[in-house]
Image 1: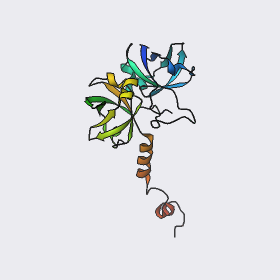
Image 2: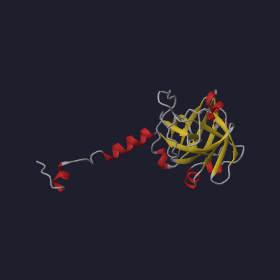
Image 3: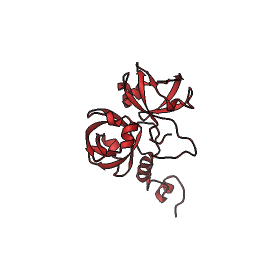
Image 4: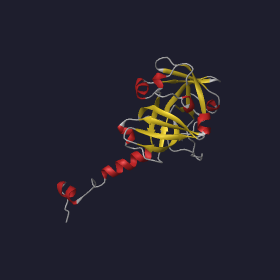
Length: 209
């Protein structure tokens, strides 16, 4: 489990099919083989590491469902170590399970902030609400607005400086993960009224007076 607060921007060293090696600094601290790291919003397991980098296996399914399969040597990636019990949750609960990819549709400056608009598939937009949470490449962001095909976020200066967002260009593909709480609420609402009723009891041989 992660918080969407990026700790460091790493740099891809090599990205052959099925493997990813990333140069990093801070996020290598207290990390060993078998530990999880959030890479551009994708939870990956460390298979090996050196004092200056770690390596991950990337399954074909992960490459297809995220932007990790598009990475090349020199690309920047957002890194975050797992949440520890008792730590501050500055963003929101992020699982590192990408729901879908989106695409940067537009960007503009608004005061000291950058406004980004991302196109997203309908199954992702269903869970997105204004002022709700969304993880974009593993970054916890607040939704400023949404319409039938996209959503917008406002990125402050600190986030611009400490993530890979500022370097994104229109057309770039990003990983999207919706708020897990929104998923649970949606499922709960869809199941309301389908529990144990008098009709259910009668159908299964129980008296329902």
